[in-house]
Amino acid sequence: MKCLLIVDLQNDFCCGGALEVKDSDKIIPIINNLVKKYEDNQDLIVATLDWHPSNHGSFASNSGGNIGELGELNGIAQIWWPNHCIENTFGSELHNNLKPINNKIYKGRNPKYDSYSGFFDTNGTPTKLNGLLKSNDIDTIDIVGLATDYCVKFTVIDALKLGYKVNLITSGCRGVNLSPTDSEVAIEDMKRLGANIV
Ligand code: VGL
Ligand code: ZN
Image (cartoon, rainbow, N blue to C red; front, side, top):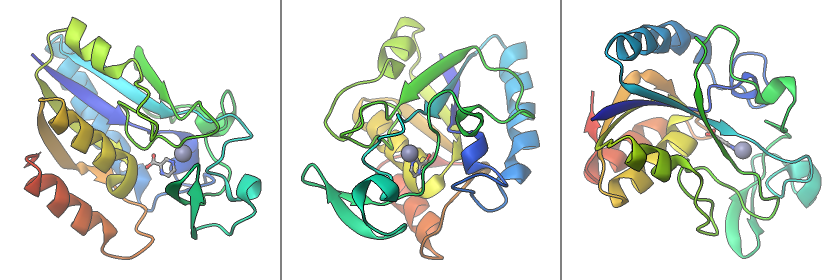
């Protein structure tokens, strides 16, 4: 069985948000078309949400570092981000134009560790995603969302490690691109590790 996995399509990553991903509004109608298709087919649809407490350690404001610079959080390399996706705020809500999604997986809740992957945080603590997929007999993940070079990439890598087949639907993804080629490089990495690029 296959599922559609929509990564972090939240206001803070969309146009006008705190960590806005360029052209993210362009993928919303593409994703909505997919949602309709998977709904009609009664396939599982899951959304991940970046869901940080306001004291989250990845925020430049909490670390004393500068936004976009590389530092260290609990011994692990960490890019300092602007405050984003603070739990239960407008910025953490799924984008209003996205069709409603029933299955939501929250990640990044532990202030001490970041969690680009929808499966595990950087400390190895799992979210509920793998259990949800297993209980629905999912073996293939079709993935879209934000951002290609962070949360999509790390979710794909963990999905492959866990033995899922992964189809990356690039028309439904956009990247942060702190460096201009980050998304291209991320797609090459995912391909090399076994993802099917569609
Ligand atoms: C993300 C940076 C920080 C993402 C999450 O969803 O790609 N990027 N937190
Ligand atoms: Zn985050």
